[in-house]
Length: 326
Ligand code: NAP
Ligand code: GLV
Image (cartoon, rainbow, N blue to C red):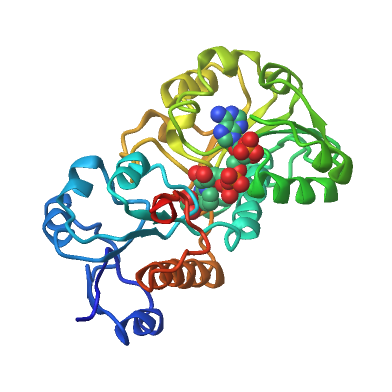
């Protein structure tokens, strides 16, 4: 009997074909609507493999419904949407899609930093709404990026890729991280510091840690109060790492200069969210990895992980090792 696979969102046809040959595939065939939890709850009962997105909450209650599930292949590098401890307890492999999205996400993060510092969205809206009457000395002036100090919180794959971009702009780079990275300090010419000192000294602060119980609200009012009045916060990691209400207050009362936000605690963010009312915030709908090439690579990698696990082999991006303990 062919293994049963469920895919929680439409992915390109040619990628689905890779699974179709050897598996019985069902798919939530909508591009813009996430699968309702109640439907996934039913689908998960009989399947052997699940390919899901960061929009699906794969919690303990859901995992307990699965009778035959061997693999949860997440099409994202972040996997805070999955209860990995529960999956491990139930002997289910979990995989993610690292590396293939690193450069694309670093591009977007640096682009968001530039858009925020130089007020690009505001300037475009200004022109299109007919407000542009003349060139004027201090009109739409922003912050310099070249020569400024960038602080990266979380020097992982994307953090490092960000350093390479920053070096092209002659930025001084500080980083804070769970573990110190001596080799990268030497190779990239960057300095390790405490989170507090990074916040005190940086002109731009980029959040690049994963979302875990340890990083929830890592940036709260206390941390924001350490930042310079002319500093910019960029978050392309996960919403819950920065306390959104504290950020709103810091921006509204000009305790910091601006923010660029690609990720929100609740996505899609509600249109009446206070952050959306501020002129000094650039907001994006979680598009860090959204290039055609990279999203295609992510879908292909998720499928490869899924197929490998279903062939009883170790997937390249295995996050838990329960299968190989047995
Ligand atoms: P990564 O290589 O695992 O890097 C994460 C870094 O954070 C590591 O250096 C890690 O330190 C550090 N870290 C983890 N927990 C920490 C803590 N409690 N305190 C301080 N540092 C901590 O991950 P990545 O591939 O760069 O991706 C990072 C995150 O970006 C993902 O988890 C995801 O949430 C987000 N992301 C968002 C988008 C988007 O579309 N906006 C796209 C891709 C990724 P160690 O070296 O000690 O492990
Ligand atoms: C996107 O946010 C990812 O984690 O891949």
